[in-house]
Amino acid sequence: MSAGIFCSEQLMLVGLIFTSLGTIFLGGWSCFCFRIRKGRSQILDNKTCEYFDRIVKPIGLVLFCVGFILQSLVYRTL
Image (cartoon, rainbow, N blue to C red; front, top):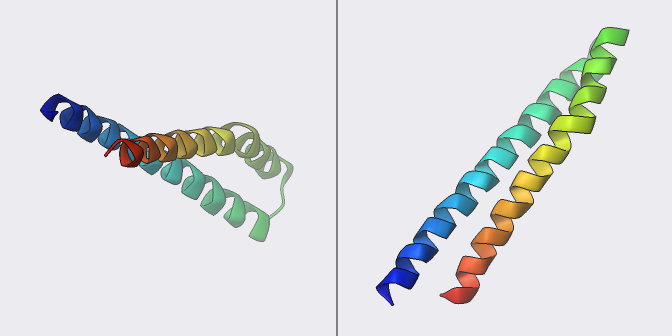
């Protein structure tokens, strides 16, 4: 029983870390692209924002969702 609780605590911590990293990625993406789209519209900046849209946003979403799923699994087992 105590091994299961220990494993659940570790899984919860990993889920929390993944969710936090996903939030940081998504927050950085939205802040960066909002500033670019709001301000100047240069080709270089738009390409950088497209890079963020294609790479950073999906990574953030995957990290956030995996973390959320891991935390949900812990709540189901307790």
